[in-house]
Length: 246
Figure 1 (cartoon, rainbow, N blue to C red):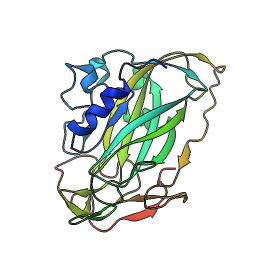
Figure 2 (cartoon, rainbow, N blue to C red):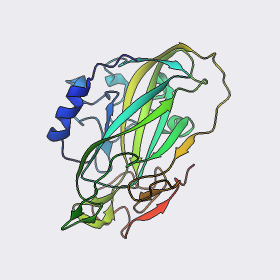
Figure 3 (cartoon, rainbow, N blue to C red):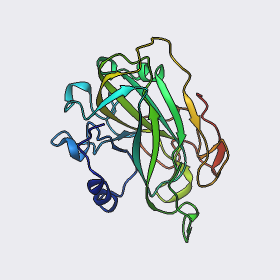
Figure 4 (cartoon, rainbow, N blue to C red):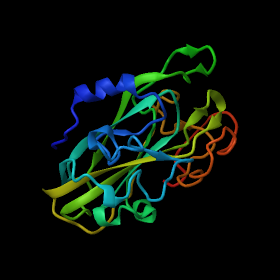
């Protein structure tokens, strides 16, 4: 797979971006790698002007950022930043459908814990154990499904159920979303039959368990829009569980 964002660029971003989270590899429509279309820094969230299913509409796509094949596994990377918990949902649709959030809902390929293999293990004096800032990149792999035909597609990364908003360890985030445009070419034979999405549990709070730590909601679309205030997405301590939409 040919991506234009190199590892060195990712490492430099670790120290330069401090707010919230978004997909970094592959590069997203609104990322720094897609200047000048980077007004939202690669993510859109509750309280931002989210008018489509991605941080930028398909009309602002900067072109395909890589070529992938059906049946191929490839890595996806995001930064934990200073917010713990929640789930990441990965969905892929043909590019022409990428402004439609319901299309992504019908084409989910994987759920994984937000802190799947990245962590913060210190006792933060204000936020508490496991809730402090973390600098490790988080990664997971996805298998390109056989039901995707050749052509341009869009990968959507959605983070939901995250916590510690405005340094309040009982407040939760609205969901964040970012998208990357790719091209499917070859690989396994095309098969229109959809497979069930995968759930990969286990995170810093639940190592080896098939659950994730989350705040407020374990379902996509439960807290999307409006002013991002510490009580707007639910209020209370973290929980453990599987994604509600799985």
